[in-house]
Image 1: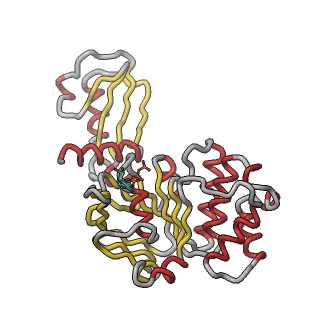
Image 2: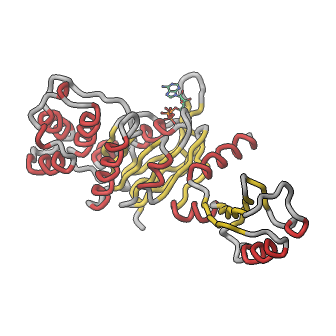
Image 3: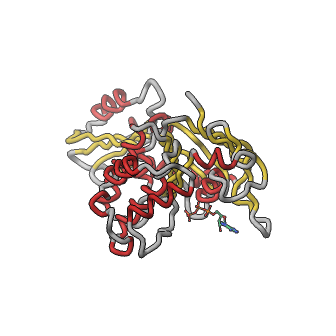
Length: 309
Ligand SMILES: Nc1ncnc2c1ncn2[C@@H]1O[C@H](COP(=O)(O)OP(=O)(O)OP(=O)(O)O)[C@@H](O)[C@H]1O
């Protein structure tokens, strides 16, 4: 695994003393998609702005492709594309000129063939001669991505790429991100949408109050923390848990029982439970299992940290 972005001991104190980032360490592998999840004000935007060198860190270092983002700012910045949260486009400018201009800002020689490829991949090619003001909100968001890709960066930061866009466009954006990954681009995105992280990320970082609470492979995270529940529907509902079932983690729900178990352990206790249900004379009509979603995992992580604070 080659590290492309390395963040070490990053602290950001804004004027007035507020600490938006507290000693953050984060290592991002080349070619991965990492989603940073966190509530409002957690420090996600501050983190990516500081990595990109737009905001100065108070303490700590960041390297991008081995270049320090302060002492070798230009070399580090050239490797990075940043899609900001806010739409900050020139309304009277044509799409094609907007992306040409962004490329020029990085001192790159003109390359219309590359820009055509970028605009085509974002379904913007037929809008290349439209003025920004004539585009829909979703198209403007894609122009922001095209701008960020105009100088052929190796790392793309997307700050809330699908905030306020409809479900269909959100899915289109996910496809765009997946295609960029196929082209070898490393992607770091911030999001409020847990389903977004669940759908596209290889790794998930959870950030709250300026601290990284966890960074973990998405599938491992779901398995490690995933509680499963087995719902047993009963032919005749019960009002109390029979004595023979007292040792199981059971609650009564509707016409049935809910059994919680841990996917980490070798023995889930399901076989014993089913046998003991029969012993108790309870007739089952249906069984369903359910695994905790990333949303439940996230809520419980942030809550644990708040309890500990
Ligand atoms: N320029 C600034 N000066 C002072 N405080 C700031 C500044 N920018 C951000 N903050 C504060 O730093 C904290 C983190 O803000 P940041 O925008 O990084 O959070 P976020 O996780 O991106 O939030 P959101 O999800 O709402 O976009 C917030 O409490 C915010 O008010």
